[in-house]
Length: 213
Image (cartoon, rainbow, N blue to C red; front, side, top):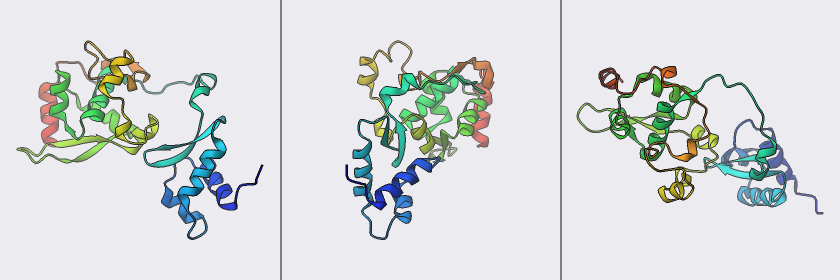
């Protein structure tokens, strides 16, 4: 088997050592000037194709990840320090599929009031961020997902989110599950009380929070 070029080996080492996925600009800075980064990545992808580790693109960046079919053999039990409430999971799903979206729009879709704590948890997790203010009366703040959200769920872009028909075909959507698509079904759930929300009791509080954002 032919030995990979120095550029391929260097890029492979960078990807292996990186704590986060790397973009092509970062890789280019470490490779010889004028090196074709796309060609280097294509060669690495070919080297790892069918192996236990594969080169994948997430959030427009590149990382070495274990092959999806081996996931059942690599499951590790570890203590969860924070559980997302059902309200938080539903809110995350709404933001992912409707962004940029305001607090009032989230409440309208869910049909219940939204406590400030729910959004705080998603912001602290790094999955959601403010996306500017809507040019409407009151100029409400809008929210959208982050690159960290894409990386956590193994998505390259928002276009990779499951479509409605895919969710229905997989049996992950139906009845009242429309606001919490199956992409988020694996998240650990706690009670709504964990983030301070009790459906239907926070309309006034959330309205005040929106005005103060």
